[in-house]
Image (cartoon, one colour):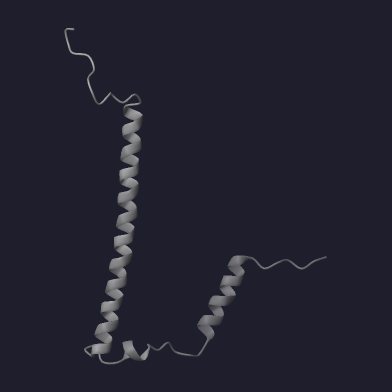
Length: 93
């Protein structure tokens, strides 16, 4: 008979227990651990804000793309036979 295979929750529990049992302490990198007013720290902070702005702009672009796409599709379903651009026959003739 084969032994039972460990399940994902059991493996995660063992990994969490090993992490909590480790004796090392978490320390910050030298840039974050140093003076908060140093130019190096300010540059790293500005880089984080720039990358966050890039991510937000890309997500807004995707949202606008799908918004325009869905509006155009809804317009097609509303008017399946588009009207001609030019009137070829006058009224009353």
